[in-house]
Figure: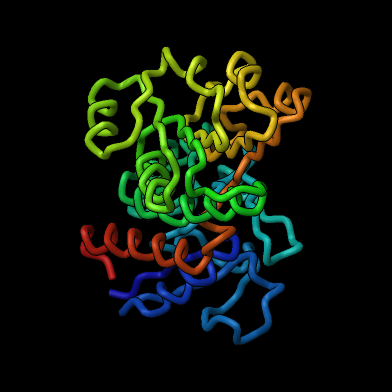
Length: 293
């Protein structure tokens, strides 16, 4: 049975996602928010939002950023505003699947009221682990760009040992960094030690940064506080990989003359093709589990 997939908005990584979706058997892909692309750049037909009927759609893919609280969509390949109102969602069939990168109160509410399935991709373990690879490579790129010393032999402290922190610790260690990882989990402290890295309990964080060259945060909470920044050497560079607004006191870091960078959406910045392939792979897997194309 033919499935009609609408990709509404998105960034550079969505170009590869669209190419992969176009290869699905028994699927028609329609695009909204891609009118700035040259005709023929991608095979799918481009539409304005008012030209497609919500009731005809089986699968909808929203941008990684989802929508804002009013349903507005980010579309870097279009100058036209795109807004998905609650009345638009209510025209969807109940079996429609809506993919988004992240959700919010608005998307949660309209999907519940419309009885549609909403799947936030960035909340999934598989997506987060796959994305941790380009994220770690992006952090390496930024470390090289913003320092005048090698990663090799540098004192690198990573806050957090989750899906991103684990990969970042692995990659920086492989480059010869003297890597320490901060966590409050006893289990994670044991794993860090098993990896022959330096394990730092969260309560000892502040007293462990006196010789830090690179401080990389992966914890989505304010953990790089004034107390920590005060003890950093003047040459330390902070790279914050946590989701916006990050976990660093950026204002105090600036006052102290410490370079602190909020690294936003690194997979889409440093490796959009790979990031798009990751999204396509996971979406195809989810659809196959549901017996769709």
